[in-house]
Amino acid sequence: MDQELLRFLLTGPTGDVKDPKPAPVDWLQEREWNEVQTIALFKQFRGIDDDFSVYAEDFRAIFDEPEAQKVPLPGDWDTVLSTFDKVCFLRTIRLDKVTQAIVEYVTTEMGRKFVEPPTFDIALSYEDSTKMTPLIF
Figure 1 (cartoon, rainbow, N blue to C red):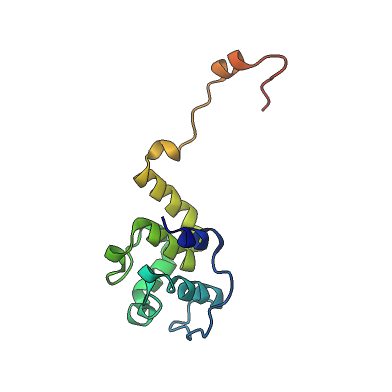
Figure 2 (figure 1 turned 135 degrees about the vertical axis):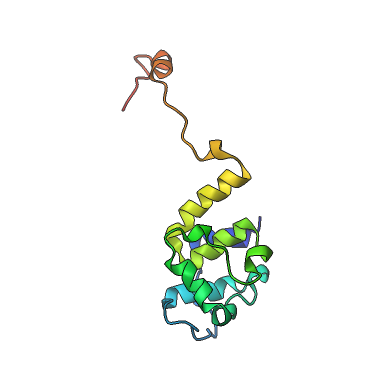
């Protein structure tokens, strides 16, 4: 896993892009366009910012979709990028869907047990408790 890309996923851009291009669409805010241009600096994303002109309506569909994490990326991007890369891209235009995308990524890569909370067994927990380690709810 690319550690720089992971850092981008967790924190976003650390500043503004030098010599930014003008946004080719009017529906992206300045912050979102800066994120798209920042992710385009990673080798696997080179040219994705330019493709916003070519696939403007397809990217808009992702932007507008309630389940944006399930919409395929336009052009060759959906086949060229890994699942993790797609989660990182989603961060640029739909930050609100990143948590759901990460849950789906972990489920696919590691299994459902890593995203579901364990069942709570009060009888077992009571047996483990003592007057020195009580159960607290």
